[in-house]
Length: 158
Ligand code: MN
Image (cartoon, rainbow, N blue to C red; front, side):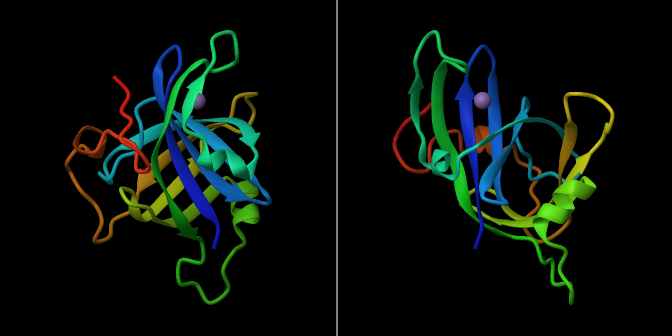
Protein backbone atom coordinates (compact mmCIF):
# COMPACT_ATOMS: atom_id res chain seq x y z
CA UNK A 1 0.00 0.00 0.00
CA UNK A 2 1.30 3.52 -0.75
CA UNK A 3 2.39 5.67 2.18
CA UNK A 4 1.88 9.23 3.28
CA UNK A 5 3.81 11.30 5.77
CA UNK A 6 3.30 14.67 7.43
CA UNK A 7 6.49 16.34 8.59
CA UNK A 8 6.19 19.31 10.93
CA UNK A 9 8.91 21.70 9.89
CA UNK A 10 10.16 24.78 11.62
CA UNK A 11 12.02 26.63 8.88
CA UNK A 12 11.63 30.41 8.59
CA UNK A 13 8.04 29.77 9.54
CA UNK A 14 6.35 26.71 10.96
CA UNK A 15 4.46 24.59 8.43
CA UNK A 16 3.47 21.01 7.77
CA UNK A 17 4.85 19.13 4.78
CA UNK A 18 2.24 16.72 3.50
CA UNK A 19 3.70 14.04 1.23
CA UNK A 20 2.00 11.29 -0.75
CA UNK A 21 3.72 8.38 -2.43
CA UNK A 22 2.66 8.77 -6.06
CA UNK A 23 4.47 7.33 -9.07
CA UNK A 24 7.65 6.38 -7.22
CA UNK A 25 8.21 9.72 -5.50
CA UNK A 26 6.76 11.70 -2.63
CA UNK A 27 4.54 14.39 -4.13
CA UNK A 28 4.76 17.20 -1.61
CA UNK A 29 2.73 20.12 -0.37
CA UNK A 30 3.57 22.71 2.28
CA UNK A 31 0.55 23.46 4.45
CA UNK A 32 1.08 26.68 6.45
CA UNK A 33 -1.84 26.06 8.83
CA UNK A 34 -1.47 22.29 8.92
CA UNK A 35 -4.04 19.59 8.23
CA UNK A 36 -7.41 19.55 9.97
CA UNK A 37 -10.01 16.92 10.78
CA UNK A 38 -12.74 19.56 10.59
CA UNK A 39 -14.54 19.22 7.23
CA UNK A 40 -15.32 22.94 7.26
CA UNK A 41 -11.62 23.83 7.06
CA UNK A 42 -10.01 24.28 3.67
CA UNK A 43 -6.29 24.28 4.21
CA UNK A 44 -4.03 25.87 1.64
CA UNK A 45 -1.48 23.34 0.40
CA UNK A 46 1.26 24.79 -1.78
CA UNK A 47 2.83 22.19 -4.02
CA UNK A 48 6.59 21.97 -3.56
CA UNK A 49 9.28 19.82 -5.13
CA UNK A 50 9.02 16.03 -5.13
CA UNK A 51 11.06 14.17 -2.54
CA UNK A 52 12.55 10.68 -2.61
CA UNK A 53 10.45 7.99 -0.96
CA UNK A 54 13.14 7.46 1.68
CA UNK A 55 12.59 11.02 2.94
CA UNK A 56 9.46 9.83 4.75
CA UNK A 57 11.80 8.53 7.46
CA UNK A 58 13.62 11.82 7.98
CA UNK A 59 13.41 13.53 11.31
CA UNK A 60 16.05 15.89 12.67
CA UNK A 61 17.80 19.14 11.99
CA UNK A 62 18.35 20.57 8.52
CA UNK A 63 21.62 22.48 9.01
CA UNK A 64 22.00 26.25 8.75
CA UNK A 65 22.75 27.40 5.22
CA UNK A 66 20.77 24.55 3.62
CA UNK A 67 17.37 25.02 2.07
CA UNK A 68 14.69 24.67 4.73
CA UNK A 69 17.17 24.93 7.62
CA UNK A 70 15.47 24.05 10.89
CA UNK A 71 13.87 21.25 12.80
CA UNK A 72 11.75 18.47 11.26
CA UNK A 73 9.64 15.90 13.07
CA UNK A 74 7.51 13.10 11.72
CA UNK A 75 4.14 14.34 12.87
CA UNK A 76 2.16 11.54 11.23
CA UNK A 77 2.67 8.69 8.80
CA UNK A 78 0.82 5.66 7.49
CA UNK A 79 -0.72 3.92 4.53
CA UNK A 80 -3.31 5.45 2.29
CA UNK A 81 -5.76 4.14 -0.27
CA UNK A 82 -7.27 5.88 -3.26
CA UNK A 83 -9.91 3.49 -4.53
CA UNK A 84 -12.71 5.04 -2.45
CA UNK A 85 -14.70 1.84 -2.88
CA UNK A 86 -15.27 2.59 -6.54
CA UNK A 87 -15.71 -0.40 -8.83
CA UNK A 88 -13.11 1.05 -11.21
CA UNK A 89 -10.68 3.07 -9.08
CA UNK A 90 -8.91 5.99 -10.76
CA UNK A 91 -5.14 5.56 -10.32
CA UNK A 92 -3.76 8.18 -7.97
CA UNK A 93 -1.31 9.44 -10.65
CA UNK A 94 -4.31 10.20 -12.84
CA UNK A 95 -6.13 11.88 -9.95
CA UNK A 96 -3.03 14.00 -9.39
CA UNK A 97 -2.92 14.99 -13.07
CA UNK A 98 -6.62 15.82 -12.98
CA UNK A 99 -6.14 18.03 -9.93
CA UNK A 100 -8.54 16.19 -7.63
CA UNK A 101 -7.10 13.55 -5.32
CA UNK A 102 -9.51 11.55 -3.17
CA UNK A 103 -7.75 9.43 -0.61
CA UNK A 104 -8.29 7.64 2.66
CA UNK A 105 -5.51 8.11 5.21
CA UNK A 106 -4.61 5.46 7.75
CA UNK A 107 -2.26 7.43 9.95
CA UNK A 108 -2.01 7.60 13.71
CA UNK A 109 -3.51 11.10 13.77
CA UNK A 110 -5.01 11.62 10.34
CA UNK A 111 -7.61 9.04 9.49
CA UNK A 112 -10.40 8.79 7.00
CA UNK A 113 -11.24 10.46 3.74
CA UNK A 114 -9.55 13.58 2.49
CA UNK A 115 -9.65 15.49 -0.75
CA UNK A 116 -6.91 17.59 -2.34
CA UNK A 117 -8.11 20.01 -4.99
CA UNK A 118 -5.89 22.06 -7.28
CA UNK A 119 -7.22 25.58 -7.36
CA UNK A 120 -5.15 27.53 -9.86
CA UNK A 121 -3.91 25.91 -13.00
CA UNK A 122 -1.98 28.64 -14.71
CA UNK A 123 0.31 29.83 -11.98
CA UNK A 124 3.82 28.61 -11.53
CA UNK A 125 3.11 27.80 -7.90
CA UNK A 126 0.42 25.15 -7.76
CA UNK A 127 -2.01 25.87 -4.98
CA UNK A 128 -4.23 23.12 -3.67
CA UNK A 129 -6.73 22.84 -0.82
CA UNK A 130 -6.73 19.95 1.62
CA UNK A 131 -10.21 19.20 2.94
CA UNK A 132 -11.47 16.50 5.30
CA UNK A 133 -14.46 14.62 3.92
CA UNK A 134 -17.38 13.79 6.18
CA UNK A 135 -16.99 10.35 7.75
CA UNK A 136 -16.67 8.85 11.23
CA UNK A 137 -13.17 10.34 11.65
CA UNK A 138 -14.11 14.03 11.49
CA UNK A 139 -13.33 16.09 14.60
CA UNK A 140 -13.84 19.68 15.60
CA UNK A 141 -10.91 19.60 18.01
CA UNK A 142 -7.60 21.03 16.89
CA UNK A 143 -5.51 17.94 16.23
CA UNK A 144 -2.38 20.09 15.83
CA UNK A 145 -2.70 21.33 19.42
CA UNK A 146 -3.97 18.05 20.84
CA UNK A 147 -1.15 15.99 19.35
CA UNK A 148 1.81 18.26 18.61
CA UNK A 149 4.69 15.81 18.84
CA UNK A 150 6.49 13.22 16.75
CA UNK A 151 4.98 9.77 16.28
CA UNK A 152 8.41 8.07 16.22
CA UNK A 153 10.29 9.83 19.03
CA UNK A 154 9.79 12.17 21.97
CA UNK A 155 10.79 15.16 19.85
CA UNK A 156 8.64 18.23 19.86
CA UNK A 157 9.07 21.54 18.12
CA UNK A 158 9.07 24.48 20.48
MN1 MN B 1 9.17 22.15 4.67
